[in-house]
Image (cartoon, rainbow over the protein chains, first blue to last red):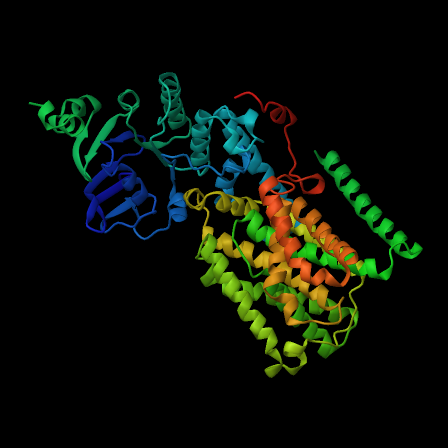
Length: 256
Length: 332
């Protein structure tokens, strides 16, 4: 059974078909790239999968659980984590708390335990803090654990967002332009990071990216979108030579 | 870790006892006359109520301009209990529980529809609720004659002394701090920072909005219940728009997201107003609104993040487990 399956997915905003007839099947353990020119509908697909928009047509299922009609927090709890194109951290909270909050849905104490600081509360808090610190350490953020997230440099904020998504203990990680605004050396580090966390946390990754260097290095399979529809699908080198993809990126006349 | 924690708790307990002893000594020696004792009690009651709004607005980011209405619900419902059952210690404690519970219950019922709104819209909705409650208190005597309506409610036994108020003030501070430093508190702070992101990391944002709102309003109810048993006269104007603004000013002045700031500002605010009353004499009431506005404008201009920013001190500060992690803050 595939991990994520989307069939005939479509959404309209007024008269605009942002996504239509979108089909996607991801197997466990894959790294899949979702690429396409600006405005092709890639982020909209992410927003559909994570429940931020509800689709006008079609169905989505994650490990056989239908996703249609579920709220974002429920979809997270099923095992889908995501990052955002424009970083969305909890800026005024500490780096540690940004990660710890993602453990909250799996916390095993009641609010009364929190008020009275029962042994159960103390034990759970110690466990969460331990795990969060371990995760921060893995991503090289531990030295900044008690700084405010907004005070981190850009690259570290990107990493923290990935750390927060991993703290949700997802099976599928959606990365929305993780390399946006990064220089070539930072992109190389990111490639390593994505491969590393994928192995370490046993993840399946779906990522949106414009930087072809990253896409070609990391992804095992690509899906290309333009104007809300899938125009090509396959291995990176196949996609790169597909005339439909070339014309979408470079314009019709370029592929004569 | 255990020994250090034990030591810290001991220091806090000694600190609380010391504060109590000093105030008691001042009262006994007459430095603190009954007038100032009343003001101090008022300050502690304001602290409890303001902590409630601090949870709702400062911690969770839900803009509420109707906080005094919940203060009023607590005051009137607790007052009704002791007025009809008598003022011994058990009915008093029962009244406090009823006042707290009623405010929390109303907050829950109001919160379910209203908390679906955000920012300004939520502010307008809570403002509307505050006005409805004011009209309700004005006309309450038509349903329950004991509540007095627009002429005010009297006859509540004055059983809340300094000791009780001090005790409940300390309890409220501990509860607020324990809430903020728990997973539930972190969830609330996350939704203050970014609702979309909070949702995506698995936080049922609506549930935590309601939770924070009910907890905060329950504290307002507790404050109101104490108020009813300390000051013999409840009047609807004590619970309308202006007192709600008082709470709001305290939270904003103290610093959004800082319980320390809320506590310090609440106490300072009450004493400042009384000080002004002493300086300005009878013209005070006319100048009050102007002074409020001036203070608020100057703080927004000079120190927008409030007196304490979002920092916490002493008992309220979260425990930093790794010292070495904290020292490396400048490299980037």
